[in-house]
Image (cartoon, rainbow, N blue to C red; front, side):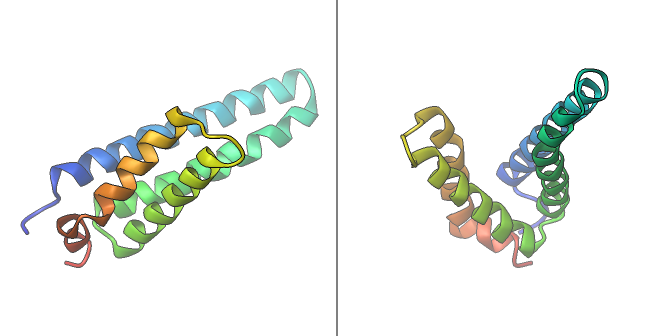
Length: 114
């Protein structure tokens, strides 16, 4: 297989966009916390960490690293679990299911084994 498949390119770009949005959200919370109430700074920790992890996954997906395949799979399986428990949230369920199914297609998996 020559190059990166289109689906992986799309997945990597979506990962990048999601990560940048998380980091933007964290930055806004940090600014609000600095102005309004320092306790708000605690709410910036999770999106900041997830945004950084997302950027690392973007790099790995873009460069077809095997670790990015497994970690993207794990994170999206966790997203599926969180979307189902304690109540089913269909909108939060659709995208992770599509990503997991796509990552498990033999051709997609093979691209990460180059």
